[in-house]
Image (cartoon, rainbow over all chains, first blue to last red; front, side, top):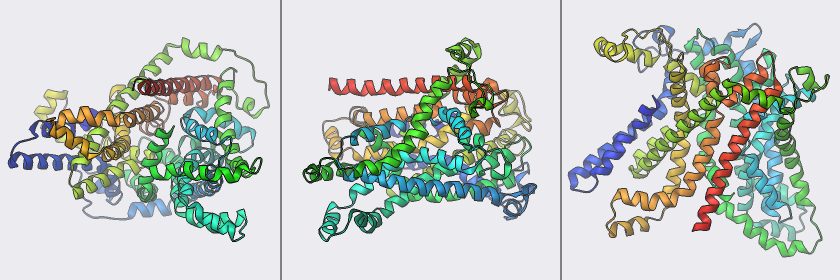
Length: 304
Length: 328
C-alpha cells in the first residue's frame, strides 16, 4: 500500500527525466506530466482531511451506504449536534473534554512562553560562561525520546501526588515544549535591534522597564508563533494523558476520542464530527506558523 | 531564519567589552534559572531515573509512591528482556518498520520536494498547501480517518475492492466479497497500513525541507553545469545531492528517531496495546509497564534499550558528519 503511495510520484518524475530535452512538443508533455504528478500528490495528501470533513456532514444513511458519495448529497449538521449536546458518558459531555484540553493547552502555552522568553533573552542578549553549554543542552534534550520518559514521569507524578489531575499534564507538556520554544524565541529576541534598548538605557530606563516596554512588545509576534507550537504539542499529546488521568471527567480530548471511538463498533458520523472539531484549530494555527517550523527544526539541527 | 540565528553572535560580541567591566553579571543566570530547572527536573532527571528504575523489581504502584521497598534486581530486568525470544521479534518489528518508513518517507518527500521546485508558481502553491494539510493534521485524527477509510463495511478501500470486477478480484486475491474483511488482522497488512499512515503524515516535512534546500542552491551552479554539457540527471547527482547532503543527513536522523518510537498512530490503529504480534519497542515498553500486572522495572529496561539504540543512531551520524568534514 505504501509502495503504491510512493509510486504515485515516482513514475511521473522519472519519465519526465528521460524525456528531458527536445522540441516544444516534449516540453509541453513534460509540463502536463509534472502537473499531473502534482495533482496526484495533492490528492494523496489532502484527501483524508477532505474525507473527514465530508463524512462528518453526511447523514448516517449516506455514510453506511455500499456506494460512497464523493460529496455529501444532503449535508447535515446532525452529527455535530449529537456530539455537542449528548452525554458521552453519564454526566460528561464533549464540551467537558474540550474544556479540559483547552485548559491544559492554554496553561502550558502561558507558562512555557513566559519561561522561554526569559531564557531566550539570556542567550540572545548576554554573553556568559555557560551560554554555549546551555545551547548545546537545548539541542541534546530535543533528541530525548519522550516515549521513554513515561515510566519515570509517572513515578514523579505519583510522588508529587498529582496523579489523576490536569496539572500533571501541564507540568509534563511544559517540559516537552520548552526546549523548542527557547530555541525558536532566541532568534526573535536577537532580531530586535540592540540600539533601541541602548537608547532607552541612555534615557534612564531600568532593565525591567526596557524588558517590559521595548523588548516585550517587539518580540510579541515571535511569542505568538512560539505559543502556537506549544499549544499544538499540548493539544495533540496522547500517551501521557492516557497514563496520568484516571477519571473519565478529567480526560483530555485525545484520550476521550480513543476511549469512546476507538472501539470496534464505530459510529463514524459523530467520530468524524469530533475529529473535525479537534483538527481544525490545529490546522489553522499550524498554517499560520509552519514556515518558522521548517527553518527552526533544520536550522536548529544544522547549528548543532 | 538563518539571518535571525546569526544575529545573537554579533550583538553578544558587541556587548562583551561593556559587560567585562563588571566582574560577573548575574542577570543572565537568573533569567536562565526557571528554564534550566524545568528542563532539568522534567527531562534530564527522568532520563536518569528511567535507568535507575530498570535496575529494580517494581511491580506495584505503591512502590512508586514510596510506600514500599524497591528490591534491587541488578541486571535481572535486562536478562529477562534479552532472554525472551519475544523481545527479538519486537526488535525485528521495530527495526524493519523504522527502516521501511524512513526509506519511503525520504524517497517520497524528496521526490515531492523536487516536484514542487519544478512546478509553476500557482501549481506549486496549490500542491504545497495540500501537502501542508497532511502535515498539520494531528497524528490522532489523521489515523482515525485512515481507520475509517479501511473500515471493513463502509470504508472506501473495502468499497474499491468490492467494485473490482469479480473475475479479476477472484483471480488476483481469491475472493470477490470484501465486506467484513479484516484489514488489520494480519500483522503484515497491519504494518503496511501503519506505514501508509506514518509516511502520509511525515513526508510533508521532508518535502518542504528538501524544497528549502533546493531553493538555497545557487542557480549559477546549474547553469554552469548545463554549459559544460551535463544533463538534468547528472546535474542532480553531481550538484544537488552533494550540496543537500547535510540536510539529508539531518532529515534521516530526525526521521529515524521519529519512526523508531511511533506510538499514537499504532495505538489508534491497533485499538490499544493488546496485539502482541505487532508490538514495537515503544509499545512493548508501555504495555509491560502499564498493562496489568504492571512491571515498571521491566518496562524501564526496554525504554533504556530503545534510548540506547537511538543514541547509537545519532552518534553514528555525528561521526559520519565529522569524518566528512575531516576528509574535505
